Image (tube, rainbow over all chains, first blue to last red; front, top):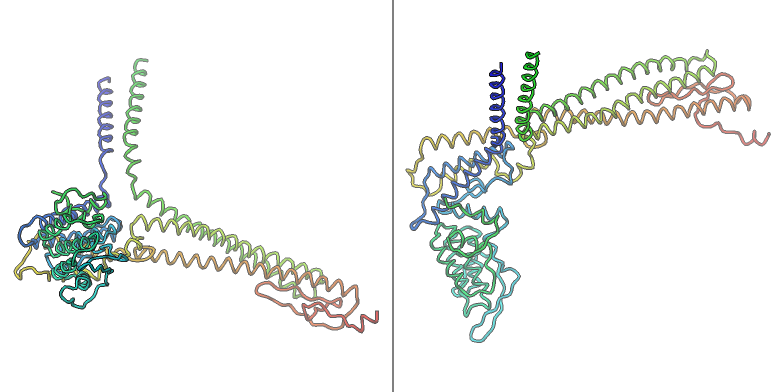
Amino acid sequence: MKTNLIMKLTLAITLAALVTAQAGEPQITAQTVAQDAAAEYKTALDQVIRAAVETKDQFAIDPNDVARLRGLEYELLGHTRLGALKKADLPALVFAEGKPQTIEEIPGRALELRLLKLNVNPWEDGLTNKAFRHSIDDDERTFIKPPPTNRYPEPGDFQASYAYGMGLIARREWADAAKHLTDAAAVPGGTVGGEWEFQILVTRAWAEAMAGDFAKAKATLADVLAREHQCEVPIRGRFLSRLLGMEGQHLPPAVQAALPNEN
Amino acid sequence: MKHNRSDSIQHRASALATVLILLAVWPVQAQNEVKSTDLTQALKVFVDNMNVAQSSEQAAHSKAAELIKGAEAAAAQIKDTNLPPQSRFEAHAKVIELQTQAVRTQLEAARQSAKLLAAAKDALHNISNDLGSNVPEELKGLPGPEDQPKVDAAVGNLNFPADAGIDPETAEALAAARTYYEMACKGAVRGPGGSATLQTVARRLTAWEAKNRRAIVLSDAALRRLELAAVSGLTSVGNYTLDQALGPQGSSEQTSLTIGVAPLAPEISATGETAASLLPAKVSLRRALAR
């Protein structure tokens, strides 16, 4: 009888221990699996971005990776439509939202979308409503930022080059935009404080990244950060420099989370 | 005795084990509430409220029908000129009383239904939320399903080599994900109610609510008409008394005006005939001066 009682007690305590152990385990729900899919998508895209940043040659992507990313996008969109994933938790979808025009544009577009979701616009250079001064032969001149245009600039007209370059950015013609932005930053004598050139060259680095040429973007950014400038490095510049492995740039945590993970 | 004590120990041990198991299970239930329990609760609230509203309406309708039947019998007495005026006025008052009771019964039921239907609507909304189908705000700004074939075409047109291919497994996974997405798009209908079934139920519930609102306003208007009918009865009684006090006013026709369901009181003169008009009888100036 006593043995029987001890056996029953042991069994009950074992059962209780088992159930208690299970209580600590996270439950698998529609929400958790949807979040898993979002994490998988970010990891897959991170790998693509990392590969693009680290490549020495022309960026290339395996068609299987494209199909896998696209499949994950369909899955995430389905999860969101069925209410398992909140729209706010949906990662930026490089194909469904970004619609890249070329393979080379995929990593840059993914980064651009991530920043836009955080209200950081890589193309917002902060030059609006500011007057800039530069001197030519002791003649001081003042100018303001011109609006984007389709008119091809005259040689040496840095303001027109800026306007045309930004028009090309809007049309997402990255290589030509980078070329004209180089001309736009070539101000005779340089502007006072250097903010004009600084911001334009950050934009140029972004254009090069968008074209998939991260090596060139890194060189441009290293050059621009070494220049004398009397302005703060904008978040878009800090983000790009951190992406390209240039240390010393602080980022807000939310923006830092948009960077691709190392693994 | 020994056996009994052993039984008692065993009993207490079993109870302890049960308590231990219950304590162990409790956090599991508290932390991870089963959603279907909430859903069942919401469904119960929805069905219960609808049932109570329906039975309450039916009961009110039956009671009102009985009262109106009684009122019709009393209304016949108003027109019966063989009855003494007092009886006809009493019949008129009875009609008004019964009709008022009927309308009030329906009004109360409609008011009660308004609360019950609102609760049912809330429960339906909760069910929609629980099923994840009531997400119109969430769907705003999402890439549309109709855009996805274009996106696929654009992805296919990226500058891949012409012979670029993918593994069959990857192709299968992509096709499966696309099918899942298309299924999700069909299942998640925009607008309140979510799925087609819930939308239909929500529309019918909304129609019932509207009908109920109309019933409340109509009952309210009917009560005001009955008040007017009661006032007309008072006027007639006043006229009758004045006629008796002031003497005959000449011939007048018997009428019984009806506004809606509520008959106005019969106009009865001292000669036993009804007056033609509800307006106060005009007094001749000459006659007034003659007094």
